[in-house]
Amino acid sequence: MNKETTSTNNLTSDCDVLVIGGGPAGSTAAALLAERGYAVTLLEKAHHPRFHIGESLIPANLPLLEKLGVPDEIRAIGMEKWGAEFVSPWHDNKQVYEFAGAIDKSMPMAYQVRRSEFDEILIRNASRKNARVVEGCQVQDVAFLDGDSGVVVKASHDDGSIETVRARFILDASGRDTFLGNQFKAKKRNKKHNSAAIYGHFSGVDRHEGKAAGNITLYWFDHGWFWLIPLADGTTSIGVVVWPYYLKTRNKKPLALFLQETIAMCIPLSERLKNATLTSAVEATGNFSYQCDRSHGRNYLLLGDAYTFIDPVFSSGVLLAMKSAFVGADTVDQCLSHPKQAKAALKKFDKSMKVGPKEFSWFIYRITNPALRDLFMAPRNLFRVKEGVLSVLAGDVFGPTKISGPLRIFRFIYNVNSLFNVKRTFKAWKMRKYNIRQIDDSIIESPDPII
Ligand SMILES: Cc1cc2nc3c(=O)[nH]c(=O)nc-3n(C[C@H](O)[C@H](O)[C@H](O)COP(=O)(O)OP(=O)(O)OC[C@H]3O[C@@H](n4cnc5c(N)ncnc54)[C@H](O)[C@@H]3O)c2cc1C
Image (cartoon, rainbow, N blue to C red; front, side, top):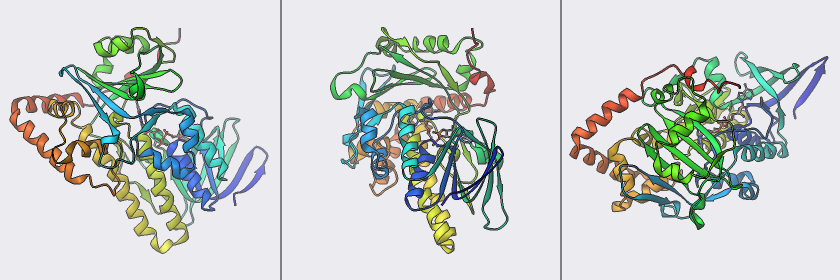
């Protein structure tokens, strides 16, 4: 049981597992562990519902939502997403990938969700399962006690009072704040990738007809790519992921204007936005890709974005966060109830944390390469390669579906294609190397001036 004592303004409590952050990773892990009878405290600095970017789910999310017991609530807020459409200025056709064509035909769809609603469903589910959920409470310090004695966490409430929590195990699910990653100085920039994003919500965006209405569309353009994500209430999320040097050209221009000017560079997207109105503040985020140099220690795990962030092009973030929470909950259970098995359980957790980033990153590093674009825009199902690629797009990367054979052949075809266009390949490689160079992020994230 959670134990609490109060003195003047401050609160001291004990629990088995403390979770930092109530996003998809933290709320999922808290619900699963509380369900197994552990005393769980989840501290979330914000109050739900709160805005979060990352609105496109992929099919492999759905079985996890089912296991959490929230599929009906998600269905009620979600826009059905049956596929992903790719539009390229260097190709005459549009290419639609329908998830139903993946190797495993049992996961044909996903949802687009407003994250304020989605994340609130998950955190309330954790409360319902008896986790102690405290919102408006920001973790400030984590002290690791000697041996296996656990941790002492200090957190501040919105009213200024301080809470001290002693826990046997801690899960860092603080997202891109990477609380423990920063404390340990374990967060490393991904030297192989670098991008930044600007995004906002619009009304009045043209939608496709019928089943395709909820598809995500990805538009390539000279400086990166755009997403168009239709949400259930008629709002559309539009964002652009660009090489950081491009965002630097914003200079002091308001973000909203800069986003509109960038959209104007992509004619097919502009056409869908000809009657659209911006309905939200426009935000930007830089320093995209990083990984912590460890995923765990004797009594802590790093979950979801608190461990690593790749790139949102395949809408994989929420799936990876929730998957890390499922594997993480099993790991904590093993460590606390069978300490002799802790080492093996932690090793297994570490291995699992690397699977998703590895599978997606191969495509992420090449998605702006002409050789990969050609293959994406004219897919063929030779030796089931299209089905294999679709399985990755569906997030079916954790097994047991056998994707490695088709993906190996796909990579072989990609390499042959690159060799046949050796000049173009070299030029693209050189350009990418230049584009991913590090720049000063403070310029990117500086908000619009308040008028
Ligand atoms: C531009 C962009 C586009 C994206 N698009 C997609 C997409 O289409 N599909 C997709 O699946 N993913 C997408 N993602 C990724 C996705 O948003 C994340 O991967 C996902 O939210 C990770 O979940 P999480 O629970 O690990 O972290 P978060 O969802 O970030 O949750 C972390 C929580 O921790 C809280 N917190 C932080 N620090 C503290 C503290 N010290 N004390 C208490 N609480 C704290 C925060 O308030 C937050 O609620 C996108 C990301 C970006 C940047």
